[in-house]
Image 1 (cartoon, rainbow, N blue to C red):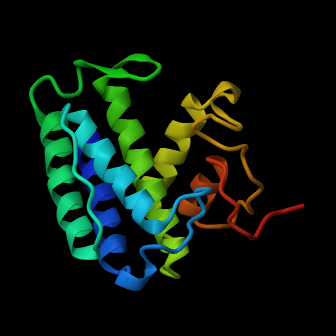
Image 2 (image 1 turned 90 degrees about the horizontal axis):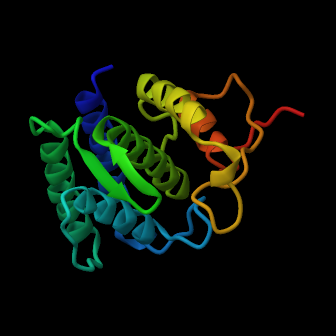
Length: 183
């Protein structure tokens, strides 16, 4: 799958899940430990803006989050779509990373947080099956044990029935409890 198209699909799926969230669900807990739906949305928005070296303002209500996400998604997509967007290096907390890897990281992050919001708000978690399968493979190739555990970006991989949808398997690989585990 084309990486720019994949990134856009993840952003679109996130936008749809966010729009389907009720205002009264913004403070609901998510599978991300200690994060509410609002926190997850702000994380995605900030991550998108960070790609362009921009910052975002705190947004509180659903309409503001939806608008901020739309703008941040446009900004991030434009950075990656620039002539050097996939070949340039991005400075990340753990070092310099080529754009071709960063776009995969952002796509995975946005898609997984789509799952988090869907799960927290009783929406369908079977999001973007083809894309989730690709991002699961991407994650399996890049996430090593040193990135897992307390104080690290990912929890320990959780058991998940291989018959579950790809987005559930991706979430479990990244440390979320999804149910339907095999013993």
